[in-house]
Image (cartoon, rainbow, N blue to C red):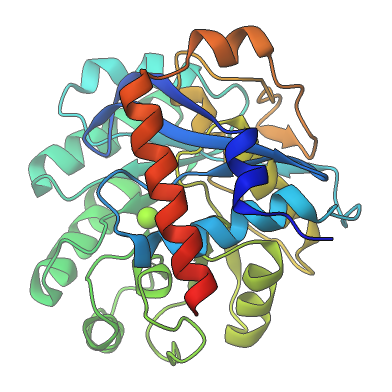
Length: 325
Ligand SMILES: [Mg+2]
């Protein structure tokens, strides 16, 4: 059975989700939803991504629209809180309250080591037994990373530091860092995989200890599972700041994994002021489920005609690129 561009455009809804706090430099998350025989699907490449980079996101959405995901190995997925790189540490207690029961906190860092340390120590104060992860988004040099990771480990996080995500940008830098770091802190890779030209072609040996899996930018559940099997590393499933539709798909990926030893970064719905449906965070976990999509919220959050046109053109362009491959 074929699902065509026309089918996708016929059911297309584009929504703008207002966020409670600035994250990744944005306060509104614009994203596209369409419906296929298997249900709602999300096409959510960030606005600045070109057609080539958006292609995997479209593959994931088409898979979600057309293929029913079988029941997985688990029905509930432990999740982490996500703390944005805001320098106003007084907000942190409130931010953490959006994630009831979590025992793992991912903190965005890389805005200056003093601010980073202040943010981490405030989290430690509010949740003293929580595991801490920091995400650098590749912004440090190897030398900075060595100094900063030792400082974070030594001064504020200690053995609570679960891993450092993408401290440096490239594969070679990650490998150099692992060689020179000395302190026993795990390194996770995110951009190194999801921004790779061919994520199967890279050799991650000696570069990272943990792999981030994001279902949309990696091209869907099947491909994400293949990547996890190919790289043979422990994984963490994380969101790309999708609406509840994409989050639900990430939860289904997490449910399918043969082994899952880490809390997943799928609780980012907590950062949204409004969404098209709800999967609640309860006792630090989210249930693997297909949320009911609220027609009322779809209406309420709908973008302008102009933005809708922009997304229609974007989907058309990426779909054609897919066809051309
Ligand atoms: Mg990351």
